[in-house]
Image (cartoon, rainbow, N blue to C red; front, side, top):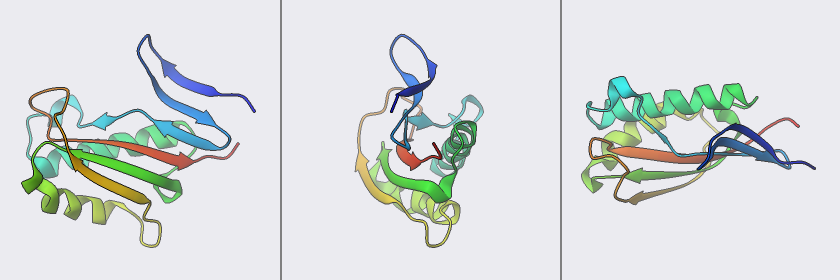
Length: 119
């Protein structure tokens, strides 16, 4: 089975699909939300996950795993409130949430996900 890469640049691809599993690159809030609070950034980030999943033929009901990176540990409650409303009931992926330095100072949250795709 081949490896399918989407929107490949010099450093990374936005998504890589192999054996029916999609590996998405880290997603952060869009430019319009990058100076917002954790709720706004999480909503924007998850909307970007939705768009990328749709682009590759998957959706949030097909999530397998997620790793959430938070800049501030005190933001976990507000991030979880958005996450809980976003994940379809009965379709929660395996998830890890860690605190980490993020690539831009204004970013409060980043996520990487894997999802099943038809192939």
